[in-house]
Each structure stands twice: as structure tokens, then as C-alpha cells.
Image (cartoon, rainbow, N blue to C red):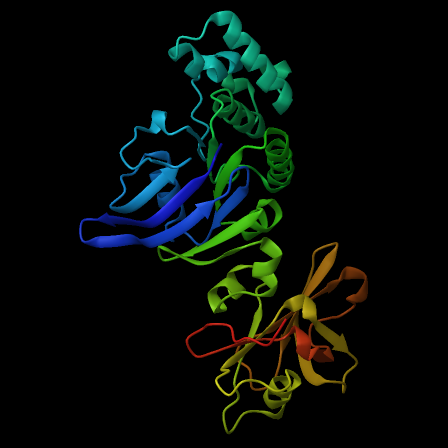
Length: 353
């Protein structure tokens, strides 16, 4: 079992409240990601679940049992930190089996459990080594293995891949997803990286200033964000936002707004994902000038200046289609069904997608 219920959870430091009454049910066996910018409260929330931070208000239930006052060791949770925190004088096998040894498990049983776990993580060949002889990715696998041997009901990951290089992060994302499917254990994963969140989570909780802005499946949040914050946080490059034109707006600005079709009277901004913008020959659609072309290999991001708009428009397209140079004039347009609209208070208005 690995069901959690967060009911009105609050956290204060003195008179400053940093977590503002969070309600959340975590399903048994799911991979839930807490994502958000630095300082949004996601790691604080994880540490309260682990018992490393006290809960100021509300109730935390783990498998139906109130856990607010339980010691970390009694919560059935195992945490993997950003830092590997391995004992440098112990071998990999000794590091992984240390909690079992402290629990009085016999040496023979410890060795069996450690070996089985090492096989799952594909690190059996590393068991005799010391941490100094391991790469960053290998050390993180050992830290995960140390958590697995405890057979927790829930794994808590606090930005475990942030110290790894880009290529290794991709590999470890795949490994963690595979591990989740193999173990079937509840996992809560904290990250500021929206790519990790989108590719790994069964559900995503988007945190902002101590609150959850939206909770749901990754593609649902991407296509139907609850508000402007979620829309801009998820997606790279960021969504293009276009303000409602004022009386003296440029013809290009007016044309872009009109391309979104009929909108609610309260709409103050429209949002278009970079991949939903398309380019045409100069003179077609809305005229734009190429300011920068970023060629990423598999794709290209074209940054466009449009008369009357302060912000550049970003267009994401297949690399083979991008043969543009700085200064080129093109036409830009989009399908009205791909436009999102937002009110003055930043909530997304219904009726789109």
C-alpha cells in the first residue's frame, strides 16, 4: 500500500506561511510529480511528508493512518536526495545494506536483499566498489538502491537528477520510469524541470507560491492549463502570449488577435504554443521579421519580431523546414482552434481545446 491524503496542509516559519492549505490525494502505485519554480514550496511539502519538516496545520494520512507526529522511520517512506550522501568508507554493498544492518537483519539475508536490488538497478558489478570509484549516475543508482532495500510504501525523490549532465539525466529518467513500472510502488518526485515532469509523471501537481495551481495528467495540463502560470511554466519554448490590442494597435497586432476567432468579452490575452504557429512566404498571413534562428538539430526555434508587439514570437518547427536567416521576412499564422484565451485575473477561459 502507498496511499497518501493531504488535508489542508499548512506550513509556517514564525508568522510567515509558506504552504497554504494543500489538499491532495496520492493514489497507490502512481508516479506523482511536484513541479514548480525555486521557492514554490514543492520540496518543503515533500519534506513534511517524509517527516523532516513539522506540519503547522492540517492532516497527513499515510495508508489511512494520521502521520503528523510519526517519526520519519515509522512512516513507511524512503527519501532520495539531490546529494547522494553515501558513506565514503563503505562499499556499495555496505551502503545499500546499512539500514538493514541497523534493523538487525542477518548478514545472509542482507546480502540476498542487496543482491536482488542491485540486479534490478543493474549495478551488481559495482557492489565491491567504494563511492569514489563511481560516476555520478552510478552513485545515484546506489542511493536509490539504499532506499529500495527498505521496501517502503512510498518513495520520495527530491530533485535526484539535478547534479547529472544532460545526457545522463535522460538515461536516468528512463531508468526511474522503468523502475516504477517494475516495483509498482508509489513515487512522489520533486523537480523544477518541466521536461522531467512531463515525461515521467502519471500526474503532475504544479506548485506556485505554496499552492497547487493545477493537478492532472501531463498532456491535459499542457493542452488545457487552468491559468496563465501553468500555461507559461509547461512547454519549451514558452507559450506565446498576445495582449488584447488597444485603440492605436498596429495592423499586424490586430490581425494576430483576429486570427483567434470570436473570443469572450473578458479575454485579455491569447496564448499560442510555438509548435502551433506556422510560417508562410512573405505577404501571407501576418508579416514578421526573423530576429534569431536557433537550430537544435531535430528542430529549430525561430524568433520573430512583429510590428506593434514588444515580445518576440517563438515558432518551433522541424529542422528540415527551417532555412531562414536573420532579417528574412515571413508570414506567420495559426489555427484558431489552437489558441487559448485568458482573463485579466490570468485564468483560462473555456471554449478552446
